[in-house]
Image (cartoon, rainbow, N blue to C red; front, top):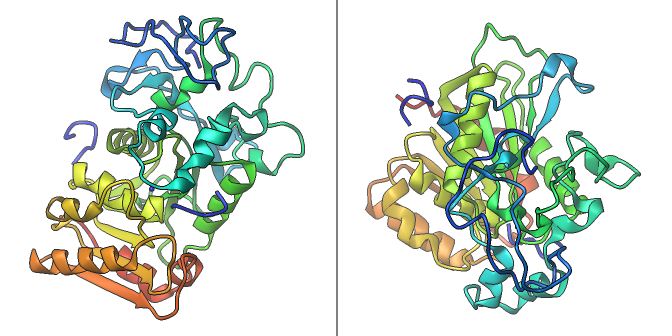
Length: 359
């Protein structure tokens, strides 16, 4: 099978214009913007997003993937290729909150602080895979902010995901590797939060005899976007030696709910799901049970979690059982929201995940 042919973590302490020929995109050439975070001088102005090519990923032959061999870090690279693509399914995170779509006072952090990526220190489009560890501002001239004059930086949520890919130390193109896709949590990010999430991904137990490729995308919207994730996976499988019968999706909190949201629209992609402390807002993921019931699922949730609903997670497990799904629900006694280290470092949990192979 060839992917090209067949086609949120609610963590309490966290959330180019292409130089190539632009393609016309419906409703993105001009518009009005009233956000206080706009870089334009007036509150009602013409703008263009940093991504002006439509999101038909399959139609482009010029989407470049970084070369691991020439990278400063031969094991891990940053990929910004898909940030050139504009997705009509994107949802403005700030407007969604202002419109009352998210019924929780904590989301006021978005209203108070705005679009987090417009802070130069939080510019996740920097091409350096370890940009968040640098002592200098992340945004540098002629890199991620080399935008045309019309670009409104606050519109990056329209664009495809920036992501990192980490290879096994003994990566060999003659071998096919399983792929683990890690969805981070949070709704407002910073350099420190993104470093925190990257480090969580590194805690996933590694078997010497069964190394995997780790894919970590970065979201700007509040919930994860299924189409954007599919394109990320397809780009990776086209450029890295991946066993497409062993693609696994995992996430924490907003990323935990993201596993259900993404898999519900891409059930053909994943061999198994591992959801940790899935968050219950802005809408219940229970309605997605029927769409993910054919994928093996492991849900882990602390019964003392005061951020994400343990009750809804247990209800999801019961609903999946009623649908004859292959489901394991791990209830962590006195576990709080931050149980991910305990789960990811557990060899039995990771063994369960990686032993699932899709026909």
